[in-house]
Image 1 (cartoon, helix red, strand yellow):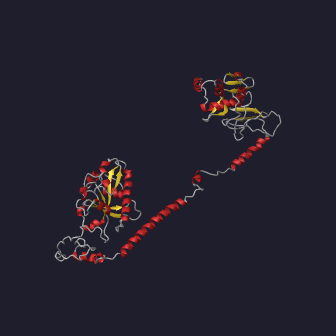
Image 2 (cartoon, helix red, strand yellow):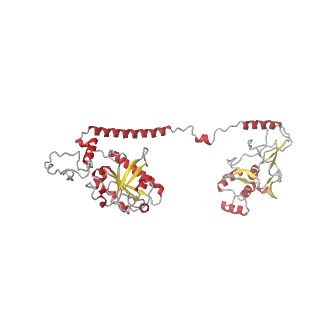
Image 3 (tube, one colour):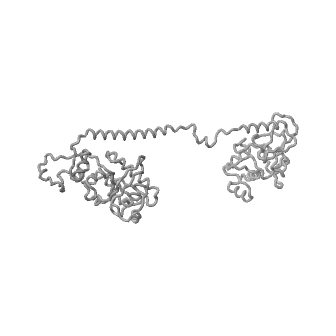
Length: 469
């Protein structure tokens, strides 16, 4: 019998006093003898097997509180029983339950096992086997069909599983080649790569949803373009000045465009009696005709050239003409002070190539900071402005109010994310998108730049802008 079964038997009979310690062994009366440090078949919830001396000490001090028991066991440097194992272990050893999941399947240990060779197990074939694991190489072969009472003894090395007995059943030698044959034909069914392939998972639906979304967006853009072309096709031209060939004709012969001469091709002089009186001599500056705005904003003539983005001319600002190229083209924010030291003089105009957020070829943009230097027809190409939040920034602009400005031009305000909200109190009253960047996390700058271009694209599509953006 194994040590756990023997200890349970003695506990149920109330015969714990007959368990004596002789040297390093426990003597169970005159019947059994086991080493004190031998592992039993009871496994703790932490994974280790309880030793025989641990269980004997536990049974003799089961009346103590768990804290007192732990102190006594530590004084004697013994293995302790966990609190979670205390109740089920006591019930099993006292016979209140017949079995428990914590018991490992082990082969029985015979009586009077020699303590000097704890790594060997010796038993008779005729002994009764209670629990047995045939797949464990440390256990011997037991023939249940052989009912003979021959005292054949088999000794197995517990470490290597090599048989050292002199007399072995012939059936054992027949089993060994068969086991080797089975193991030789084993093939792995799955490995790490086959598990990662996910044969039962199909992501085709995700791909189809993404493709459907792209198709819907493409059809929507095409529909908007067709409607825009159809509206331009059915809109009658009020003047021959709207034809591009004639515009070039007047440009070549007069030396100036119609807009430079103050001529609005969408307007008419019919009904103006004093027109001939105000007609200047050829080559002189033409006076502003009453009813004609200073800029040709809102005209139906398509503007030509590249889009213009206005930035503040102030030096104490996060974005000006010095660092606009690095931020809007490369998505990297550099302080204006640093960029100003790298440039010999302040540029009047900076050309950038918009690449971020664009799948097609890059598009050119102009960056300017002097609105007063813009010609009337240049205002048709202004698509965005970075605002400071000050009213003087819009002085002499060809607009009546802030509402009109940000209805025709996309407004942005750049700030640090940890700045106070008091600085953007005025900007919040306008139709302006606030873009926040970090003072130190430069890897987040490209996300802010992409956000600017996305919002500008949406705005220009809604305005049906004819410029390439």
